[in-house]
Length: 324
Image (cartoon, rainbow, N blue to C red):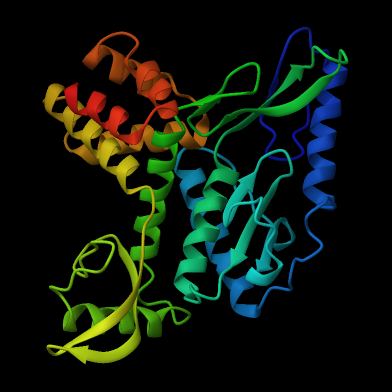
C-alpha cells in the first residue's frame, strides 16, 4: 500500500486491506487539511518562526537519514501557535497529537525567548517524525471502532487505548536529542543575542541558587535573563531561567545507559553507542534491540517493569532503576 503520511502501521483484529487503506487515506486527509476544532485562535507565524520550523525539519531529517529513514518535512501549517490569552487550558503548552498529525504550541508572555520556542518546535517535531503506529479500539457500548495511537517512538499503548508504557524513557531520549541540538545553535543569528545574554548572566552569577534550587552553572540551562536588576550583596535579585525538561527521566536514562555500559564491558567502546540504540528504536520503532540489551543484562521482563512504573511515582521508578 502507498504511504500517505506518518501513519506507519495499523493494528487490530480482523482488519481488512480496505480498512487499512481507509485509515491511511484518513491520515493523508488529516495531514493535509488540518481542519479540526481548537484552531480558532491560532495566530499567524512570524518569518523567524517559519525559519525555525525549516531548521527543525532539516535537523530532524538528518536523524531520520542516520537510521535509513526517508526525509519527511512537517509543513508549517501542521504546527499551530496560539498566544497565551487565546489558550484553551485543557491543552498542554506544547504537544504532538498523533491522530490529528499536528503540533500545538502556546506562546507564553513570561517566556518570550526565541530559543525556548525553538526547543518546543524541535522536541515536538521529533515526536512527529519518530515511529508512529495506530490501532482500532473496539467500543463495547455501540459496537464501533475508534482510531487511537498504538506506538509513538518507544511508547506502547495498551490495546484498550487506556494506558501507555515507556513514555518516560521515550521523553528522555527525545529531550536529550533536543538538548544536543539546542546546544549547537550558538552561531545561528536568530538566537545569538539571547545566547550571549545568557552567557553574561551566568558568568556574573555563577554561584547563585534560584528560588527553585537551580544553579546558574547547571548544564541544563537554556536561557538566563535578568528581570529585576536591583542588587543585594552585589548580585541580581531576580533572574528568569529556562532549562531542559524531563530532568528526572533523563537522569534515569543515563543511569540505565551507565549500568548497561559497565555490565557489558568490552561490548561497547563508549556510552554513546548505547544511546544510539535507544535513539534508533525511537525513530524506527524497532524496540527489540533495546529490550534484548536490557533484559539480557538485568533479567527477563526488566524493560516491561520499567515501562509499567511510568504509572507510579517518579521516585518509585528511580528507586527500581537505581537497584538494577
